[in-house]
Image 1 (cartoon, helix red, strand yellow):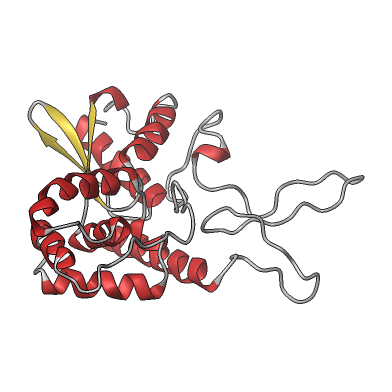
Image 2 (image 1 turned 135 degrees about the horizontal axis):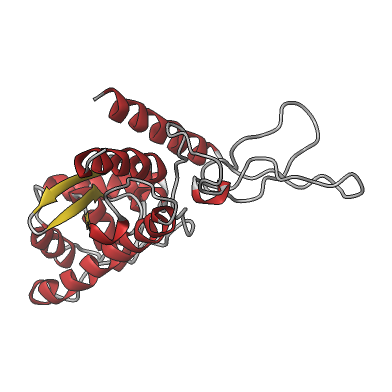
Length: 237
């Protein structure tokens, strides 16, 4: 197994963990790991470093990987809305740096706002033709000024789970392969533990009637189905 095979293994495992398409390509002088939006650079790097200890992607070791995350125009538009209107068109350039930093530090930006904010971001992106500076200029000229949008939740660090790889005995533990299990183990003398959302990992409040819930909200259900669909399309590509 050569490094090119290791790169394909890394791409498959990291794509499943991130729930977005991750590519691993040779770009002198290093192997580059690319993805758009999805988890933050730190979140994916930390998980890859832990998995590297179990020889995932060998012989291409984690230390040879360089992680590069980019932001889509839609994510940048959400960053502008999270910041709100600049005080003036002249100050939009300085605010753009704050927006870029927000995008770098925010994983899965589209999961953190309600439908109204998502629609506003899509409109802003279209009006500015995807141009970052133009988005700021448009917001600076808005009357009345656009107030900062409040995020609806912290969002998950990683949304997916590695299912395609088969590990030898002593391979990565379950917590490194994806979110927490849906039903944590409970002892015979303890009350049954609450289930966890299969998308964001938050505890579920069960009613005790009917089929147990798998997601904490319709939003998480839709996001999980979309992530699963993206993973299926990636495997078919």
